[in-house]
Length: 145
Image (cartoon, rainbow, N blue to C red; front, side):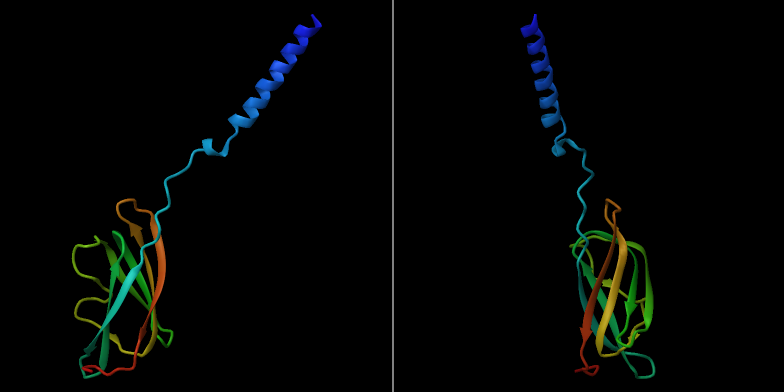
């Protein structure tokens, strides 16, 4: 009788131990969807002449992924903040031109130094948000050089 009782106790302990060791594995926990890495933007600029003859500059960005761009916060070299409303446009990589970072027919006053760009939007088609900051250095070259 006593040996049967010992067998039951040992069996119960082994069962509990196996449940504890194999039932609580971290691999069994549910995981959400993989986080999409933020897009990278290839930045470029083009010198233009503003009305009245002043030097101007236009900026363009080419995203590394499909995105819906909401806005771009631009800071010029003297610290002035400019908000460009991108209107939630969708940009598909490999299709179309770079994104113009100014309203058509306009440009920014050209200043040499670092221009900072903060891109805010969503990945397409997942709608996962992104917030990416990049900068572009503008040299002191004159328009037409």
